[in-house]
Length: 385
Image (tube, rainbow, N blue to C red):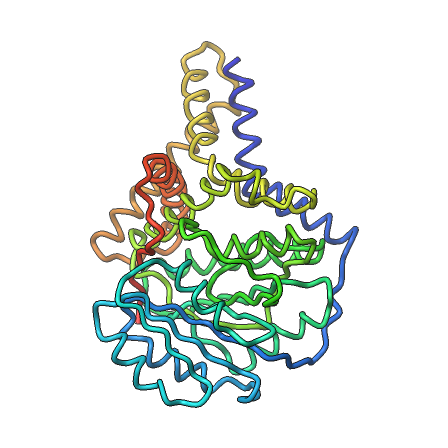
């Protein structure tokens, strides 16, 4: 029984990290779906929601105004969600700027509410939702909307790129996003990706429905909308936006536990939220996102079963190797944690600590969601400047 548990849990861990990327690569090579792109220029409403972003919001609005897109076709909507710093004052400085619409809220209501308010006023054929800290390349909007020439495409996700900085977790976080970008590219080649980032997300305005105010992952909800209505959700690597990495693993854990809680919310509401008619999308969703939530349990299963088997006489060599490899992994993660605490450069140790912290964030996200402690009011991770 213990041996069966070991191989089952180990197989699930390997499938999540390695097996699914290989499988989706094979699928993409066998049934590649192309996108009928063309250099079109529909009207665009670029929506930026901000809470206490005094240090960046002026730069963000300036970046929006400098985008290489016809001014008469670009509407910039900035929503202040009850900021308590100087965000409201800075935003108001752009109130008379042509093409800029300002929405001020004296109370904090959450990102979903802010996005709904902006979408209700938006005039563009395409809604582009952006984080306040995401700085766009000048050609990004063109790269995004060219995909909308294909009538099957309803939602487009841009390429969230990290700017190199002195963050101790830059290399680990950058490796993770490169890994994610590869998977999203292959999913798109199959038909659709089910992984999107709110840093740069374009949606046909005709597909938008108000986001439930208790929805934790607003970006995932928008992608699900498009999939449920039979449209493709695609990843556009040429649409670049730049962000700095988190200042520490602790800051990254805050972001990832919120995402984990949001995914558990998606699981709890699967019947009404998941695109059940799209069997491939369901397979991708479960393989790419949902199974990751249970990695702490799969990993625990591997460790406990291998530890128990080590007590048996004539323990198979492969079991012993797995047991000691897990102890080594744990030791490397602890060393990575200590190294970050005392200010050493993590190097390769950061990868093991980053993986371990991701599993911790999944477990923490489950606890927060099950206890109703995960609010829709987003907690910003501190980022390097």
